[in-house]
Image (cartoon, rainbow over all chains, first blue to last red; front, side, top):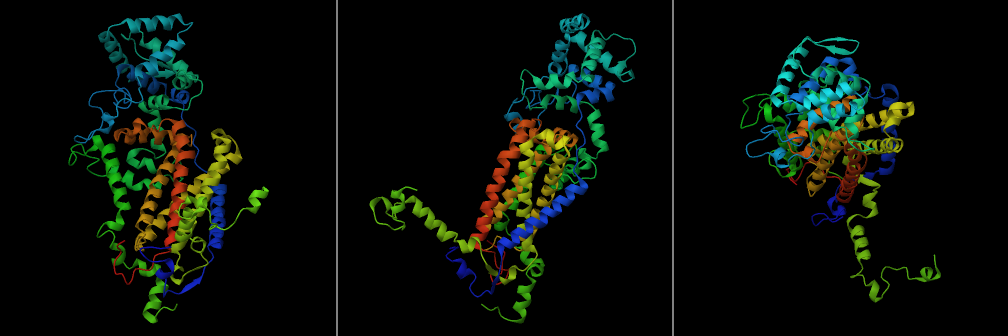
Length: 329
Length: 223
C-alpha cells in the first residue's frame, strides 16, 4: 500500500521479515477463546434474577404499593414531577446554565402518572363493581382541595398502616373514597391485572415497559431489592450485576463521577452539582471520549508512550538487537 | 453460462469504447483495491520480526471473542427471549454470550492500552486509532442495550437508573431505555452491524498500512 508516499515494502525496507501465519493465529485464537467462553458458561452460568412484577411488589409489600399509588394521585412521586420527556413539570428538568437539552426536546413520551397508574386501571376494574364505580364518581366529582385533604389524611395514615391477608388497613379517618379505590387497585395488582393494564395501552402487541417500570421505580420495594444486590447508584450500580457476576465494568469511569464532587455536592462547582449530575457527567464523558479519539494530535498525551519505557518491554527483542547488532534485511 | 459469455474476452484491457479503462468504474475500483490492499498485505505470510510480542495477541483474541459474541447472539435472537430463560440449552447460550462479551471487553481494553503505549497511531495510522475508539464506544452502547435486553431484575434496575442519565442529556427523548422493543432492536441489529463494519474497516486499515515500527528513530509519538 502507498502510505504517505511510501509503499509497505518501502516502509519495511531494512527490517528483517519472518514467516508469519495469520490464518493459523486467528484459528488458534478462535479455538482458545471459544474454549474459555464455553468453560465459563458451563461452570459459572450467567446472572438471571427474576424480574420484579407489579404483582410480586403488591404481594410482598402492599403498604409500599398503596403509598406509591396514593402518591401518584397526589402528584408527589418521582414520575409525577419528573419533567421532560414524560411531562412538563416546571423547573424539573436538568440544566447547566443555558444548556437544557431535556427541555429543548420536550415531552416526547407523555406519562400522566395519576391517570395512567391509578384512575384508568380502576375504570377498567369498575365494570360490574358498583361500589368502586361510586367511589370513582365521588373522587372525580370532588373539588381539588377536597381531594388534597383526603390524600393528605390518607398518606399520613399509611405511615402506620397494617397488613393482614395481603390487605392494607389504616386507622379511621376522613379519606373519602380513597380506601375503596386503593383496596381495589391493590387487589387488581396482586392478581397480576395491573401488569397487563399498564403495558397494553390499547395495543395487542407490545414491547414498551415504560409505564410499569416508572410506577415500580416510584415505590421503595424495587429499590430495596437493588440495595441487597449492590445495584444502587452510591454502590456504583450501573456497572454492577446481580450476584457475584461481573457487570458492565467498562463503565467504571462513568460511574466514578457520581461518587466525587462536584457531582455529589449540593453547591457544586461552575454550576455542576448533584442536581444536574446526569447532564454534567454525560457532557464530561462525551468530551473525554473525543479526547481519547484525538490522542494522536494532543501534545503530552501523545508523547507519554515515548516517555514511559513500557514500549521497551513490548518490543524487547527489537531494542535488545538494536543495542547489540544492526538489523538484517 | 451462455455461449456468448463463454466467448467474451477475459482480459481487463480488451479494447472497445465501452471497456475503456479510464471510464470503467468497475476497473477503477479493482485497480484501487489492488493498489491499496493487495492480497499479500491482507493475508501476509511474512511480518517484521518485532511483532513477536504478546501485545499483538490482544487484537486477534478481541476479534475471536467478537466472533463468539456474534455467533451466540445469532442463536439467542433466533430462538427469542423466552428460550434463554426457560430452557437449559437457551440458558447455556445466554451464558456463552455473556462470557464472550466479558472476554471481548477485557481483550479490547488490553488491546487499547497496548496500542496506546506503543503509540500505534504513528506514521499515518491516526485514523486507525480513531476508528478503534469509535468501536470501543459503540461496543459499550451495544453491551448496554444488551444488559437492558436481558429481561431480568438487573435489566429493570439498570433501565430505571439509566433513564435519568439519558433524559438529563436529552437523549431519552428518542432513546427510551425503558422500551424493551427499541433496546432489543438496537442490540441485535443496528449496533452489531455498526461494530462489525467498523471492525472490518479497522482490520483493513491495519493490514493496508502494516504494523507500526517501534518507537525509535522518529523520536516522537506524533502521527
